[in-house]
Length: 405
Image (cartoon, rainbow, N blue to C red; front, side, top):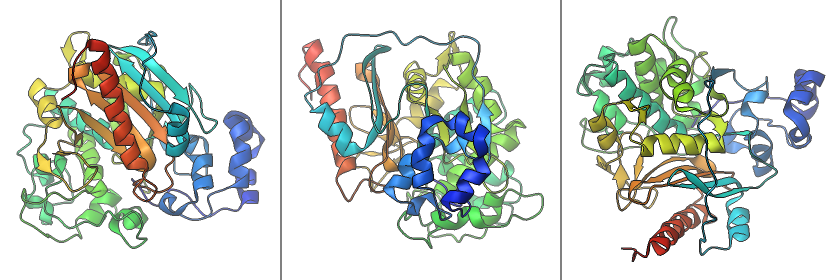
């Protein structure tokens, strides 16, 4: 997730900055934005109404940070309709309680369920928050396949200029991926003084990415490889690593390796940080159908036209438990993926963003939402999401005549 997402504006200033052409581009959603404009500098502390108005249009508003475009290709991968999936859940109540903007279930590559809420709809982009971390992980695999990254056991500072002499001299790329660097970081979404709330407000050293400037000031808390600690800052370092190793922006590399060749239906966008480069730990905007397509791409083994985008052993390790965690009610953490039970795994972002992948059941579930709190821990949304995922798995098992374990 990211801080420093907006400048301070009143509703009148919002209208003045966007102008008539901007309102036409945004469409009818402008009314909610005009009524609930973001007035502070951090999405973590916006109201529910402000988030409702902006999550659907992050990249359409000029007073937010700038965005890179992730181009699609000429062909679109179809998502054929399948028979409706009978999930033993009150779907209307679930959508309302989740404050869900979208819910899409793919089974065997076919759409078994597609619902929208909060005035959102097919073809619109919603922000992803930390779902972007799992996309970034895939780019590391691509850079390995292409030979830009030689080994996951290389030191991070071999690829990221400016980290020499910092605690990251002793951290490997693998430890960065598994969030076991041992470098101290505070990811408290409710604390305005936390690292995650402050990192994008720093002025970078000339010629250096601002996240590098910030991260090299942190102190070692544990020996590398011994303690898991969730850190958006470190995923942002991974993005710098990929960009500096490949010589390409991560938006360009994502378009070349996945978005265009796999057949996404719409262009996506990736938010810039304060230093004018993509913030790889957060804020990839796409349609819910394309988030589901990305899940299907991973389910397909990361292969396009029979060619692997990342090494098979990398993807297998990325989606398998590499570290024990204390969050999400699941088993562990891989390479920027949350690991669930029965070999399932998911990408997860604050306020309810989800790509859940269950290879054993050929199941992909993509969700977008605006929970009442970042982690959904105060009104039960996170637990309800897990229960829904369980119910969807049970519905697939029931169709197959299996008894769920």
